[in-house]
Image (cartoon, rainbow, N blue to C red; front, side):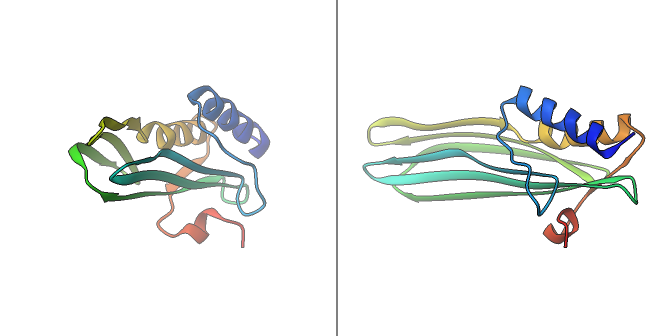
Length: 143
C-alpha cells in the first residue's frame, strides 16, 4: 500500500473523529489540540494533546509520538479520573475530568485519546505496514 493511501485514510478517520490536524513539513500529520482551556474567577485549567505521525516508506512503518499537558491554577473543587492501558507499543488513554469553581461547574472533559492511537495503528496494520509508538519526538519527524 502506498504512503498516500494510508495518509488519506488517516485524514478521513481523524476528520470523522473531529480531531483537528495539519499536514506539515516536520511530519506527515500533526495534531495540536486544546481539549480544555477555561478560566474563571478563581483559577484556570488547560488540557492539551500533541502528536506527530510519520509514515516511513522505506521501512513501511508508521511512527506515532504523543504528549498530553495538563495545567491548572487557582481554587478548584472536583475530581479527575485517568486510565492508561499499555498494549504492546501503544498507550491507550482515557481522561475524565470534572472541576468546579465558586461559580459552579467550570470544566468537564471526557476524552478517549486511545482512539487516536488505535486509528493510526489500525490504518498501518490494515495496509501491511508496521506501527511503532515513538518514545522521542524526533523519531516521528523528518530530520
